[in-house]
Image (tube, rainbow, N blue to C red; front, side, top):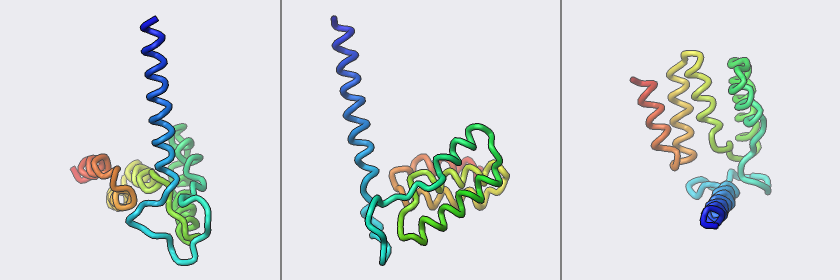
Length: 131
């Protein structure tokens, strides 16, 4: 009986965490206002980011992923939207994979600028690259 109660409590806490965690992704960061002429709708435009992460995890073509993500980033920014959380970090990871540390660090710093809550992790990755 106690085991089932503990499991239900844990599931409820997890559900609340997911609901409130995802609701945080629905608003744009306060430090950056929308660009002039921005379109209404969700503040982030995911584009092909999720597909490219999947390709990376399945050992896809890294150069092709970089090209796809950079083109997507250009389209997102030119459309007045924000890049999704993790897009700059993924580009940084991809550049690190091909040995371009300068570009990797630059993208990790951009991720930190857009999403300050990721600063500790981005600083860790940057220190490893500069190492």
